[in-house]
Length: 219
Image (cartoon, rainbow, N blue to C red):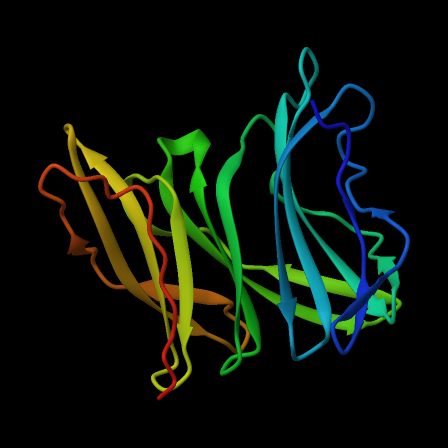
């Protein structure tokens, strides 16, 4: 099992990477924790890096938890924010996490499968404030984008229409689907998001819809 989460910052010169030292950002679990999943995003409005990670803590309370944590970078030096922000702080976990930046509202959106609620697809809007030495996150309430169990997912942002598109694998009664829906972030003080109903992107005939990718074409 993995006993912690670490990250390195790098600078690029031509085709050369220069990496800084590894920095730990996962202090919540403590000794005996098993860290299993991590996603990372970047808020261009504040230059904060936002990490999301999940851990299990066998035989102890909480048995599992999921946190967000802000970081800032200067060259190859990383500064870890002093506060961890709970998505689930006690006996709950998320999986298949992704983070994406919305430039039109200056928010980062976290999408995930809620393991404590039948793997339903859910999302949260994150607002970054504070300073480089004391980054602060405000996390909105969970909003569901898929009311059934979700598999692997992917999210992209359409800058022309100020919308995001999340797509995911579904297995419904033995039938496989690749479905998607469109999300619109509300900025201001609400930090909320609304989603359209799911639409079928692809239903294979004897194939496998669990492996896919999507991207945005700005042209």
